[in-house]
Image 1: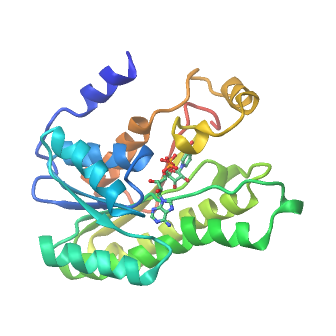
Image 2: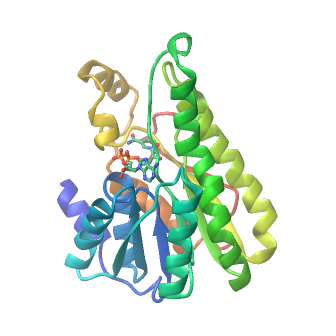
Length: 259
Ligand SMILES: NC(=O)c1ccc[n+]([C@@H]2O[C@H](COP(=O)([O-])OP(=O)(O)OC[C@H]3O[C@@H](n4cnc5c(N)ncnc54)[C@H](O)[C@@H]3O)[C@@H](O)[C@H]2O)c1
């Protein structure tokens, strides 16, 4: 099946998430945009947030062009003021936030010995502390409504480590542990919190890797292909739409690389 056909199949319209509002951070492109499309196809209003209004609006337009509901908003996940402004704007506009997907993330790879503190801090801030900031701004509204679905995008690297990715591995391991803690603290409020740990997914983040590094990864992927953003979106959709008795879990989406 071609990627295009796969995406079309998965975007069959349903009403499972009708009237729900879903915020996806860093969703102007890549995995975040695929997640937002998947949720919107199921009837949710997808709130596309990213560093600039232009990229948020461009992502939202892709979704509305498909006939689904979307809204673009600026949100720099490292900046508390920006995060709180976005959350309050969404509450004022839609009156609720049912689903939050903490997806925004970056890499700044280099061997541990050469890693500068600023590279460490930037990755921890963007990938981990951001989940603290965005979830704190949103979960109080979910708590009042006695309902919420939170999904954090981690990585298999957070479970296994990787040469040259000390900052990234630590941030993603933190995301998994934070998900479990939020799951425990908010279960009584009918809020689930789970993580999705992708392996090698074909996006701008991995397109910058050298061909020999990609070849090396491919050798260890039993399913024989790199993942597509839609593969990750499918796992997020499970946590966001069903799975009401599943919390504090991590689904690995890696083509079998780390089984
Ligand atoms: N691509 C992979 O192989 C892979 C594997 C495992 C996990 N992940 C994770 O999936 C998520 C999405 O990655 P992707 O591959 O789509 O990457 P990407 O680089 O294509 O997209 C990342 C998005 O995050 C946004 N972003 C970056 N910093 C931000 C900030 N401070 N505030 C708001 N938005 C910000 C970017 O503008 C971009 O739209 C990340 O958390 C990444 O760590 C990716």
